[in-house]
Image (cartoon, rainbow, N blue to C red):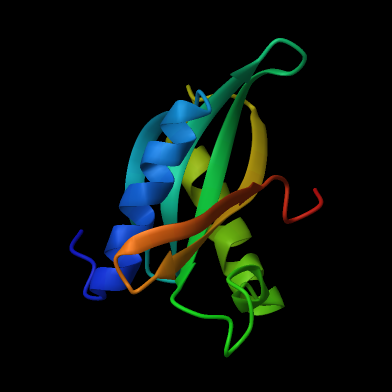
Amino acid sequence: MKIANPIAKFGEDKACEYLKKLGYKIVERNFRKGYGEIDIIAIEETEKDGKILVFIEVKTRTSDSYGTPLEAITYWKLKEIVKTAQFYKMIHPKLPESLRIDAVSVTLLNGSEVEKIELTKNISGF
């Protein structure tokens, strides 16, 4: 799926690189269903919890003028992610049973250089 916004595309690319360094295995990007989209779907494997299917929302900003990247994830956006994640899991039953929704915030400097990248786990609280 082509992303129209080049800043969003750049942010998602950087988020994927960051997640891979943290040990996440990227399964799919930009999964769309009529009512929603998930930026990155990955599997995280931990000693404590085993394999976890993680749905990741990426928010990229060039400044905090309109709030931080995480503040852009509204209740309604989170509700859309949950619904889309449930559908994705339903059509991929062989993927891990444990599910989580994370967010990666990317702040850019001069629109082309990563100033800050941060992972926030379990943004849904489920």
